[in-house]
Image (tube, rainbow, N blue to C red):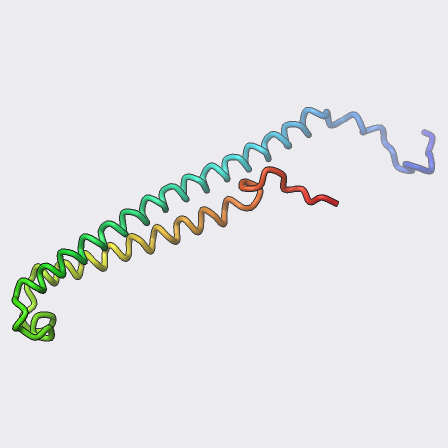
Length: 131
């Protein structure tokens, strides 16, 4: 066996791994990246829906809460309406208001997580820096 200075320990195994394996690795990494981006976009879409749903729930609950509080009349002090003589409907609207805020917050976090997982390569057409 002859030894050259460029490759002193060449055992003739260069042709052992066919280039198909390398192409399969590249295709699998590209498909994993595409799958990750698709999941991130789906998470962002679900987050947007939760944000809008939380906003709508909160606005409706605020309007109904105001209607319940002002149903007692304007001569009654607000402390009595809110603390002592609170109608069960007003307390329920406070709970719905909190639920709407929670839905909005969960949607915001879901959208943010999807945006972070998507990464910059999905939003920019060419992620390679110009030298």
